[in-house]
Length: 118
Length: 113
Image (cartoon, rainbow over all chains, first blue to last red; front, top):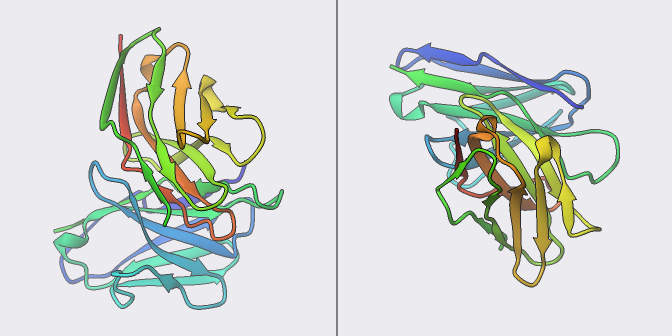
């Protein structure tokens, strides 16, 4: 099956610094990827849709200047949390639709990246 | 607007007993329904999906789910629970065109030895 990998799995940074999280589709091409944020004991909140070769589409209420998304190739999307603050601490997850049979509807998820801002 | 509800925050079941994790949905049109499982500090893993066809869907690790259109439900079931099934389970609803799925709040399953 399709594999999506995120890096790093864990990251701790100081307040005010920027952190980059990578999401890679390892064995398939993904023109679209999705970024989510998950708070403890809560569901996934869709932050934005990453589109290869064009600007990301952000969900309402998500600060595009705070969460920069770049989808530079068909296998890589990056999320940069700029000027991070403690309230940005969260579990960030990416996903991509699988290739193959059209309209399978299935998403493949990365392992997630836990960000802690001190 | 689409929505999905998982009415139980937690479900406890003894090992070897059958388990049910509930999910109800609200969509316009025909729903795409999914169940995913999440282990601590990990991403979501696909369990099963319903798009069309038989109402009883069989998935990974012995799980199955029944699509009930009249009750707008898609409950996850397993005949005999294992301790290793303990995890967080998410129901999701959406359409294939956008892949913007709505996830439920999750149900934590604890299987007791």
